[in-house]
Length: 237
Image 1 (cartoon, one colour):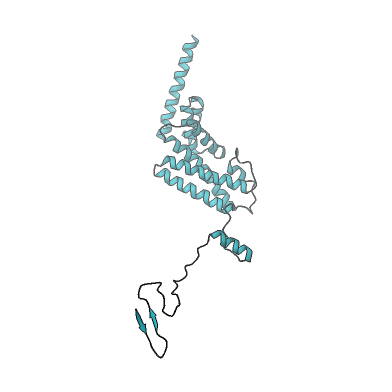
Image 2: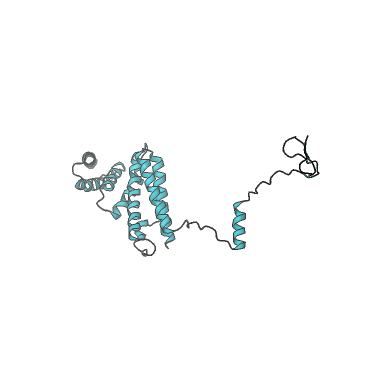
């Protein structure tokens, strides 16, 4: 124990036993007070009661925010496709399409189940979305469906019915889209509808006459049609 006595003041004796010692004069050496960490909900309620302004977060369903998220998901999915992560790409393209359908609901059309987002955008006022935003969403939707078909064709077990469905969605908006025409032909070929396959393949051949994949599938399809015709003749005779 050490004692100090300076300038006539009473000596203060400290117990040299670390923090929290007792002063000889009878006072207690109290450790500093720790800050209280409250739940964030406390501050929200506190600010409402006292009328204080809190920083406003952008609404999650703001049309511009939905457009941005949809385009972001589409970009991420495209990168996954380039990296040959096809399953991940499929999921992310679907997320982009869900954001687009959410956009249509926010803008006043609750029934988006059977409708294409781009088909609804033409009825939306300019106050809600700019022409540039509408165009971006329409292009992104077509790219999502076209790319979904491309991803499915890379899978070990291909769902050709779904490939056909996605390609036809694109062709309803862009009837001369080469990729959608070609993939529709491929889907119909593997589904056994060779006449429709030949139609779409020949339409795609008009767009890209030198494409070797198109030429090969046209040859395969014509061969299937000839064989079926020969088989029918034998059955009739």
